Amino acid sequence: MGSRQHIRDIKSGPPLPYNEDIRAYKKEYAEALDAQDPLRQFREEFIIPSKKDLKRTTIEANEASDEASDPKCIYLCGNSLGIQPRSTRRYIEQYLRTWATKGVTGHFIPHEDQLLPPFVDVDTAGSKLMAPVVGALHSEVAVMGTLTANIHFLMASFYRPTQEKYKIILEGKAFPSDHFAVESQIRHHNFDPEDAMVLIEPENLDLPILSTEQILKVIDENASSTALIFLSGIQFYTGQYFDIKRITAHAHSKGILIGWDCAHAAGNVDLRLHDWDVDFAAWCTYKYINSGPGGMAGLFVHERHGQTSDDKFRPRLSGWWGSDLKTRFMMDNKFTPQPGAAGFQLSNPSVLDMTAIVASLEIFNRTTMTEIRQKSLNITGYLEHLLLKYPLDASPEDKPFTLITPSNPAERGAQLSIRLQPGLLDHVLHHLEENGAVIDERKPDVIRVAPAPLYNTYAEVFEFCQIFLEACRNAVKARQ
Image (tube, rainbow, N blue to C red; front, side):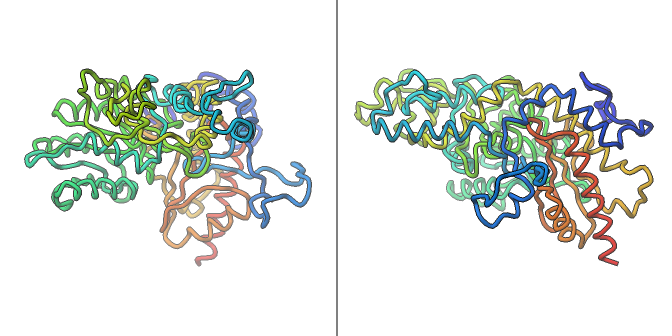
């Protein structure tokens, strides 16, 4: 289904733009879309930096903020770091107050006005709120550690190579941490990465996406020697959303376990990790889930891998926080894991980190990922349409870029990756920065633009496209 076909499927508000609809190229049209956006109230739940904030050389403002003279920036970088929910300060202040007034007893004493349960139970509160965001049972999710550490913990359990089956299949341009983790796990088991890492490379470097058929073909070609598949739910560079359900089913048909790095998918797309029969997954929370820089991560273990009975359980790296709740504080050094993903926990969680995560997850739990995904499809489709068609009198020289993200909305999340012609990136980035548009880049020539449905607006997308296209024209002139 192409992007224009999806645009026809919008469920509320005026129809999104067609080439023949001149209204689509007016800011008033974007504002009309915002007025009928069913998620529009959530923007007020977030603190959006102002343009002056971005250039300020001190943390504290020297003058009162005046939105008329200090407009908000255009923040389209939630795929790299989400912005702060307004409630985060209130949640953290209550945590600090509890710690200050209760000390160690704060682990166990509930309060009538608490936003979180006592410290000893915050991991359960976090996993309960996280589960619907990734389409999992509560028992299948743990909020713990950091993304790369969790990948290692999961691979320690799920990568059990033999002399016959030892390979790991992953993307050729996987996120560096994923690549490093896979490579080091292979070396840890005394195999050679040159032989044991099967890298799926794009067939067309100008459009570096990986078709599902290509992925399935690589699985087929290596099935007899593959112990594990580890792919990204959404590819960080291109923004491609892989067909998790189909690829997982195919891996299982070959008797291969499969895990997914959902760093760019969690809080972005409507995941169904349980229903899709995924073996395991890991993700960070500081992108679309807005937990703050380096915030605590999450992991998923399908319920069939988390079963425990008669001291029989899936091997894993063990820690005391994963042990049975009834015996955890008996200190008898006998590890009996909790059922489910909780049994993969190691250390007691940072309550400070968990507090920030829960503040954001409470917002997510006031809507659904289906509703968030619907707006994402609409607003990203609008962004794509403007990039390709606005203004109507644009010449080819005015568009010195290509989109390397799939045009099919079902094959992408909120992010569009834009590849500029060589030598334009620095000039374009400078112009965007000067005009208060926040995106991120991947050198030498790609910028990634991601309208986050909970706080970005159609009007921002319209304004961004005006700024970006002006930046492109100026960069081309400067190159001549």
